[in-house]
Amino acid sequence: MADETAMSPAQLTEQVVAAYADTPSPRLRELLTALVRHLHAFATETRLTEAEWMAAIEFLTATGQKCDDRRQEFVLLSDVLGVSSLVDVINAAAGATESTVLGPFYRPGAAARAMGEPTGRPEDGDPALIRGTVTGLTGRPLAGATLDVWQAAANGLYDTQDPGQPPFNLRGVFTTGDDGRYHFRAVRPVSYPIPTDGPVGGLLAASGRHRWRAAHIHAIVSAPGCRSVTTHIFDADNPYLDSDTVFGVKGSLVRKFRPAGPDDPADVSYVAEMDFVLAPVTGSAQARD
Image (cartoon, rainbow, N blue to C red; front, top):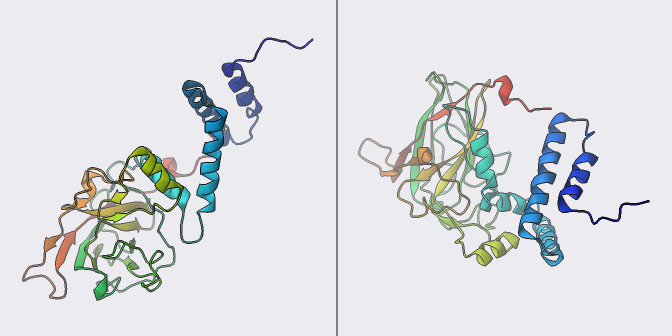
């Protein structure tokens, strides 16, 4: 005879966890178990209603529908909830340059550019020289390190958002020589609003949060035998450093964009210095089963 006692939330949670107990991959089993427990705990703690859960499903559905080959609304959602930054912090390599969010506007396939070459056009903003050195943890310069860089133009738009910009504008890949040094011409970054014409914009409006990102240049820095770092170069004079909408700012990534002086190239208005430090690939950095 079936037990007629009403099921409790805790009993249901244990039943669901047990259903995934034989997941072959130990890591997937760990992730699913934790996901079920935390999701069930959230629903129980907040006494989630059926209408609220359906609203959440509709929100996630709309988020997926907003994604295409130029727009990743789920990345944007992860960013504004701070999850992207949290994953960065959890996986940081000690002693290496701090990482921060990839953002929804990265495009693979940017052109390899000669050292010092501009990534964009004169009309894209105030010309800036970005330079520095890529080293290992011991300070040894890393030859053959690559910097895949991208940024928004002075109008606050990336090339993927702005039909007036040519494809891969303000993007480029630079490779260091034996001295580990790099330099390229970009534009001084500006603050810009994240896209708010989708579900994430509605979430920000409903929670009373602003939509502005602190001014930055993106970079993915990598070298043979090293863990790559996805990071930013932030402008020290920007007003949104303390309230970046995606929680991406870290103090170690903030740099002064100083006015160019007599010893700097005549074709730039600002100069920023940023060194990058990469950690070696180790067993702990490998993907777990």
